[in-house]
Length: 480
Picture (cartoon, rainbow, N blue to C red):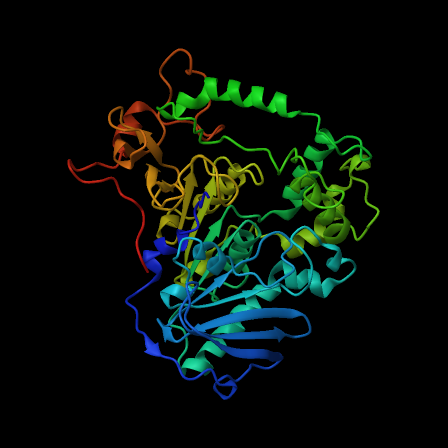
């Protein structure tokens, strides 16, 4: 099982200090004072197991609809982690706990208090019908539920442990990555550290792309059995693209910085991803247009010409988009934002994430003091793919053995093969800005960042991070 980027939270060294653990009180309802407008549904002790240490599980509801679950470990390190949710959410999700549990490094197992929310509605990941003509649910999903859950979790932690969390973090991918960005922009005081993976942050633009693509893949709504691009055609495209572009990063290894996997996101698989939905883009695109933007359950994607798209999506986008590039308040608070995206993400283009970072950097030359972006070669949407599996840039097989490693470099640097050594070892790469191709075949080819200009050879030599003989390349991983 591939487990990509799920250990990103472990790398947030700048967010953490030494642990200060104290035994918790008994799991007694009298030790928890609920904030106003919060009802505690259940409070139960959970004994130590393979999934985590002994803790108190608290379930509650904020207002009428926002459900949450808070886990309070007996041996608390004084810190709180909130996990985001994926897709349209619809149930209590905690990506920090769920993702990192697969690696045996869940926040709970490392003595963090941790919390997740359903963002204020019941449903499934691919269903948005709950939002139909319901402004409060749209606002909760857009940003309000995460903020209120963060405040509630801090308050309950302080009540339970008799002291507030000394550090609070947020981790999410996809929709959870968009939630992370929303927190840094709208509620900059909620978290000290934020990890945003493959973020879905521009909902209007994302759904426009989904609908346009599905109009091309499935032009006939009554025939959703096979896309225009068949499996045979896709295999031919992959083979030709690899043959042409694989060596641009300096090594032929079957991994491209921007290679994508189209199933199940774009073309769909053998079975529908949901009733009447052949692909994930189809499901998300049509559901979002029907219920988040247009409030029209009869929306027909094949007949939509986008002539009124701006007006159609303006109100919904004002609730959902997290595109503000002014992070002054977050920086002033002392927050740190780590963002990452896989180059092979076929769900959400990595170029949009780069554009966002570049726009922030254009306004603030000191952006690296509080915001860093990591691009991950060969990594699909949030997980999987032939690329590295963790922030330390190692791919792990089913037995836990490292079979490939690469340094992950803060954008705009990339991992450059030094021409010697094993191409599956991080020590054979250095972090540098990409070099303009010099051979005739690739002289006119775009670089790993497509439309971004490549630096000169002189600039490249000046930008390389020196490697000390006998010292391994940096793994970009620390513990917090």
